[in-house]
Amino acid sequence: MTSLICTLQHHQDDVNWCAFSAKLLATCSGDKTLRIYDARDFSELPFSPLTGHGYSVHCCCFSTCSQFLASCSTDATTVIWSMVSGEIEAVLEHPGRSPVRICAFSPDSLHLVSGASDGTLALWDFPSRQLRRTGAVNDTTMVACSFSPCSQMFMTGSTYGDLRLWDLRMNQLHAEKNAHDLGVSCCTFAPSILSGGQVVQFRVASCGQDSLLKIWAINKLSSGAYKMKLLHTLTGQSAPVLSCAYSSDGQLLVSGSVDKTVTIYDAENAVLLYRLKQHERYVTACAFSPTSPLIATGSMDKTINIWRLEDGCGGNGGKLLPGRASGGRSKLLVSDWSEDDVSEWLLEEGLEGLVDRFKANNIDGTELLSLTKETLASELHVESVGLRSKLLRKVEELKSDSVCLGIPDEFLCPITRELMKEPVIAADGYSYEKEAIESWINTKNRSSPMTNLPLLTTLLTPNHTLKMAIGRWKTSQ
Image (tube, rainbow, N blue to C red; front, top):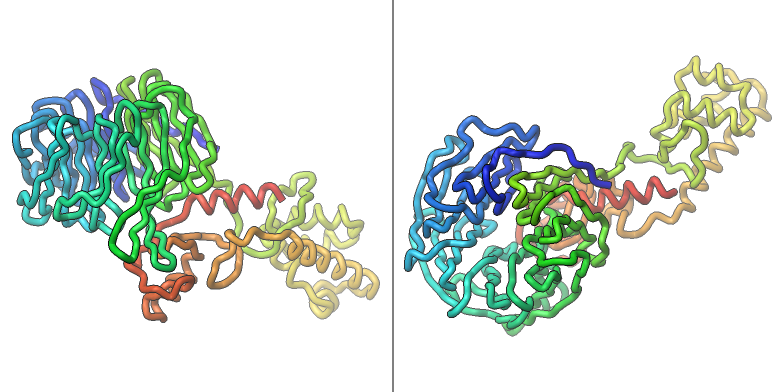
């Protein structure tokens, strides 16, 4: 389920791009400005709007630390802004002075790539703000760029329709000709790296003027060669697809189209989940928040819509109620039951004589599951042996029914084998219960619990999609 929580209407022209950091949302427009919002309540920051470009601003992106924002423009520059003061830190002039259409930071913030209308690429050393290398693809315009999660290579897309993979020496590692008929409009790496055997795999999504959204696998072989394979072609939109973005856990994919719609997909299974239709003109930009279940979408209608993905999650672990939840007792977890829920259950089970006693002793779901013959006799003063036995049989039925629910394996933490409450995705591409993987990393030698290979980073990303799936599964039981 998605809900529109607010619409930002400060730009005076088409919105061309939007980008989230952990705490901020940045948008840019044909009105030559950038707008910066607090991602908690979407109030505009005091130093917003940012003015400094002479022409339309096509793209903006945050450094990983969120301290800097880069923006590029038809004025042939990429500007670096401080997110502390809103001041210009540097102006990077593109070689050849061609309009700059796209820019992207590497995840380690050591490099910045900019691509221009004449097909040229500039690779900048970000700490020194110095130009390191240039490259080019003739007779085309660079309109898309994304760094791999390892920061060692990047993908570009052009109006010619090709996708090209580059290393930091500006060598072409792979070229996928005619990836999109009539031209690519956007491309984005999934945030996770998949590894197994002799192959390391990356995922990339791309969209284009052919009205298609595509998901690709890029395999790095042990020989060092790269192979690119089309995994899925998504046809949920009826006109050119202008923008696409992965969620921070890589499980969801969002896209915006000329048909004025926003589509949200289960990226792993290539299943359309939602179609949103609130914009009045072309949807040109989309971005997921890295820290909360929010999506920003920008449009030629000059607005930015902020959407919330509802996960339906609740509860703090415990036993699950089998597939019947009658009356007002709608919670799935017995340990979440209130005293009133317990009273309702007693009435349903023909144990109405215990209701007043349980209420007087504040028995909720957690207390119910922990009852024993001894506590019933000594603390609740249930003197009838038959009544005690009947109650305990009913409690055991709750527990037994819970075990038989058949929790999907992917909802269980690989370390604890328990239903996950706060799933996070690690560098090995697997999801774990946050507390369990943090403990593993702190006590082990930074190896993956699943592959035994070294973890490239200890960064953990909240898996909002898995949390939502677990929530949906709970409500279906």
